[in-house]
Image 1 (spheres, helix red, strand yellow):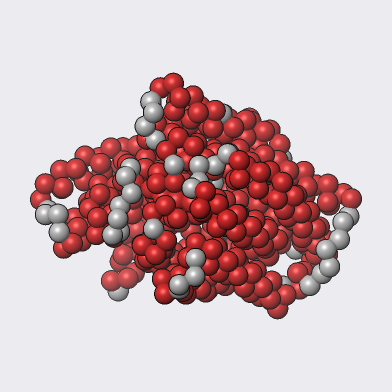
Image 2 (cartoon, helix red, strand yellow):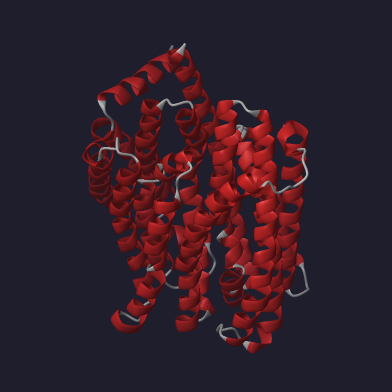
Length: 511
């Protein structure tokens, strides 16, 4: 029975991953197309202004996923134990917490945000009114996404990835409509873009809410506060918010530093780089999103061996999936940008390369937090890692002022911090799980990933010489690069058991 259940769970993970990949492919095409048209319609300066102020919306995907993970942890845990009354109670209190957080965000945004925008940011005076409209719409979108978190967590916990995919596709289509609207509009394009973006957030919030009400009985509640549940959830969310704040300071703080030192033009380059990086990173996120409910449910049902297998293989396969997509882009990014954008902002290609390296380092420990959050004991991890991430912003400030005045330095700092972060996460995981073997993890996950990366990078460099700088040359190079990487992954990246699974899969498909 255990073998059958494990097989069913693996099939569910595979099905959900495929569903999320379909979603991601569609979103990637939409995102790359719309960002090109948006840059062209707004112009480099207005695009940079939107990125520095409305950039808080871009960080929402990270904030949303992090808060969703905490809400989803408790929902998934109760689904694993099968207690419906507890599930309703957890969801109800979770909604209350996110309404409370939304009120705090509004107060901070309207007081500190408005003051900082009008007194400190490097924005041309004639665009200051438009910039204030952008800020108001960004705060509105932020709050709507925050209220939406418990409903998002409910869908992932129930492993309804098809709904997750369809709603995301609807969101992408609405964003295409926004781009066409600003392209043909005669009204101030930056103001119109911000208002329409807020309206899309409103529609998506309504769709998520309606879906949950229809399909999940535990969501048909009124928000309430039960002292013990509220305290437990608030404590968990509070520790999560520490890391979220640290990451937002690292991401948005760096964006502000770039604005203060170099103006909105460099913010435009950073905005394009973030867009491309988000698309690439989304592919590996799909796999870890599909794994997350299974890791939590296995911990809840005390199947610890399977949980560790999912944690280990999840990180390794996420790295390989990201590398296959990212390496050809890394090697050919300057040519890709030249055919994609009419006007390529300076530093854009270098920013993207350094972001790719940062994400490859990040993905090696991606499922660690899921394992830790499954226990409900995240205090030590979040405080320790939050303090570590808080050091990114002051280090970037020191680097820009005293080491190198180039904007590239802040992205080099990010790569260094991500590498050091791997060591810290390994230490923290060992502290929380006494049965976690650091050397074993280094041997079965980090070493194969490192060997595949080095071998793939060398071969991808050698292959560059055989293809012209043409569109067909790019297609041929990408195909050969991905093929050679897959062969390297199979030969040196996979263990014997993983190779047998791939061989069996191929044989079945041939039959």
